[in-house]
Image 1 (cartoon, protein in one colour):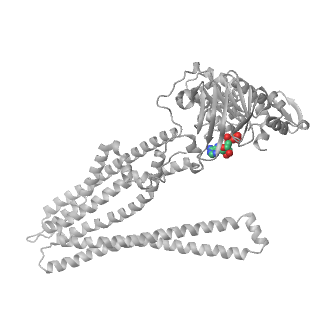
Image 2 (cartoon, rainbow, N blue to C red; image 1 turned 180 degrees about the vertical axis):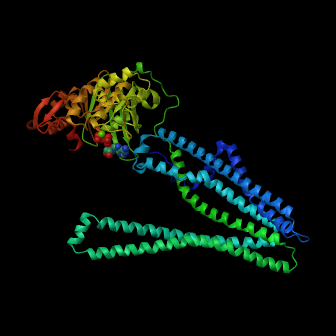
Image 3 (cartoon, rainbow, N blue to C red; image 1 turned 90 degrees about the vertical axis):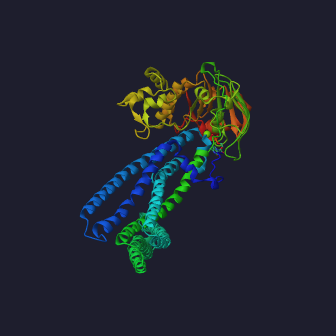
Length: 620
Ligand SMILES: Nc1ncnc2c1ncn2[C@@H]1O[C@H](COP(=O)(O)OP(=O)(O)O)[C@@H](O)[C@H]1O
Ligand SMILES: [Mg+2]
């Protein structure tokens, strides 16, 4: 089991780790911070100039309006506005670039790490929807990484710079303005929590409506209602759900408006308060000027938006917290199957291909023991078959041969080298695996065949495809080997896919071949076509096969009968039959005398056309 760190690290999560993601981009972070500070600081310049426009330009204490000064200051203020706009655009671009680059690095790191993780990470039920989850998790933190962090900074700085400028204008008025902020926070929070509640109610009501319609407006639902005369009841039920929806949706919209009303009310009411208090102050002998009061109220309007934005941002951050935690958990997951530090490198030409299991025990995810003391040796170049009931552990044995998992106890070795000591690359070179489900990725047929040997020549590819009896079929496509298959392309039949997979392994030319029900999903015709290909594939290599064809089994050098994770019988076909044990039983069940119509070259054909051996072992 992978240690995914999720639950255990609950408390260790800190935003520090998120901020550390920006580490490699320190210089650009500095630029962004500079721009954020700059834009926020410039925001207070115009209100401060406003004071001079009023007190020295428009309404000087002595003399007439100083038009020259007003024009001059207006020009400056326009320039400031333009500069602030330009810097704002630059800030937006820099922030998003930086955020996207951080996100890109994170995705690369995550993908690289996920490639390293062992199969057990993917096969666990808990991670069944892994792919979708990772995509949506990484997508979900996009905002947090690109804009949220700079938003926080920007709003905090705007808020603080507004307060500093206000203090500069009038300390008592600033005190008054600051008193309104907690009220504003309380009011918006109150509205916010109601908004959340009504949103949830609307969603629930919508869901209920669609349940009712789906249930009742189908052929069977309508039939049922008609037959039992329940239509009035169904209509009443629908009307109830519909009422609930209308009510919740109204509340949701009203409360949404209320949010803006709260902000608007504060923005409208606070200047009035300021005028009022200013009046008392001036009356009490204060030297407040008209310009100061105007500048002050302008600045004050800059106080509420940052606060509102910060409140929203905290909510966003709370929700992205869970996503960050999961992403870090993926990054913290450690692979079970790891390459040894001083891994042995085998040169392919030196490999004989002797495979041995020595007292191997294995369990998936701390589950019950799946393999119980399995020992056998497969001499170089021999064909070893495994038969046994479904779930007996045949695939598990083969998975251990390919080191998709490591044994819990015991040793799996190739040429007497423990697989755990072998380099991944050597193992991949030595080993070829054909499974029941052959996977073709989106790409051309050539790409798919060349997967294990990207530098193969066209002649080699064709040779492999001919041997796998798929060349002629490929040539039937207009684009031949350049035909695009997989998700984006069109689909091949199961048999064709299987033959592509066999061609892929033939080209890879491994010393040890593992076949796990490589043809059991095929119909008789496809299977017969593959037979020659399989013969080609098997010859001259050590082959471990979960056998599903009588011919494969009969020609196997050794057959191991697997039951409940143990090898209970071993020997060749004739020996095992003569022994009248488990194998003979399995054989008789499947090939009982009366049923056999003819024995064809590649197995047994029944009256109903079945030609497989494996069916009895797989619960049909
Ligand atoms: N990835 C897995 N995680 C947990 N249990 C598994 C996994 N794969 C197989 N098993 C269990 O291990 C046992 C042996 O399975 P398997 O080797 O696939 O059997 P066979 O190939 O003989 O049908 C079964 O009980 C199966 O449920
Ligand atoms: Mg299996």
